[in-house]
Amino acid sequence: MIVDLKDLEDEIKMVKGLAKDAGSDGRAMLRSVKQAESLLNKAKLAEAKGDFKKEDELIEQIRSLL
Image (tube, one colour):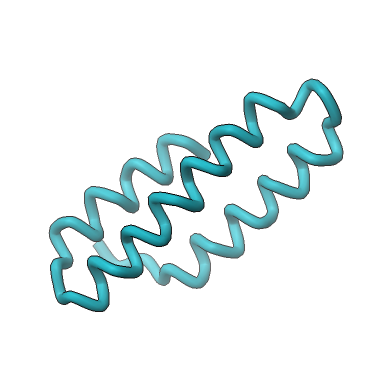
């Protein structure tokens, strides 16, 4: 799968902003964003190691959270 991690990072930031604007209604969304940020860091490490299969799996998990 060809996904630019920078684009995914930008998408996470956008969702995070929306969640913060939602106030108390956005708490669950913020939890998902935190999980997505953690998975993004793992995906970056996998990319650096050349483990593209793991990177793709993590990207799919991130997409499901967003």
